[in-house]
Length: 232
Image (tube, rainbow, N blue to C red):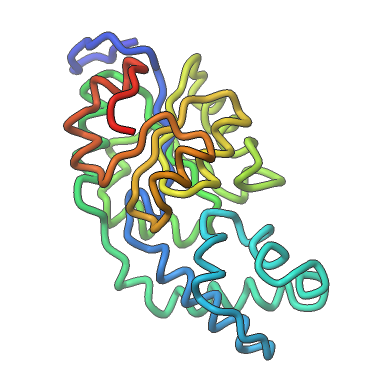
């Protein structure tokens, strides 16, 4: 479906659902360090690499995934509050990834509806919208406040597609949790390496294609949007 003022380019999709952290903004390692400091505050020495493996999940899932259900039960709310405080302190350091705004422009140029879908905190999402200059380029945003369960649950992606009455969607993300959520939602996933997960991990989780970064994805966008695997 095309929009007034945009070129009509035929694709297999009418909607693009984009992850934010690690996909549009360079923030995954900021999140990992903020979580590490939060765990330290309750006396737990959790290595950053272990936390990084769960970045992309929402805070409702990350604590138990990293440290177990007993820690979630005893400290979950305090950990999430401390993580938010620690990230707030460095959020000014988080910048857009190369090609982020170009990707939004190219998707709009092709007439797709664009929804950002983040498992993160809504306040942090506001900063990401600013640094990418996303607001005039997108049709909607969904976050952890809009669903009961975050990624890898498919709920966030399903709500994103439904919010713009999409019929067919492609999901673009940087973590295995994005790819798994897309697979569970019955949507095509495209991965980028900007979040620190490997190509094989993303493919194994369900991504149809994986690109080194957003400029490579933009260059190959017409192939991606016609559902033809190209750069595995």
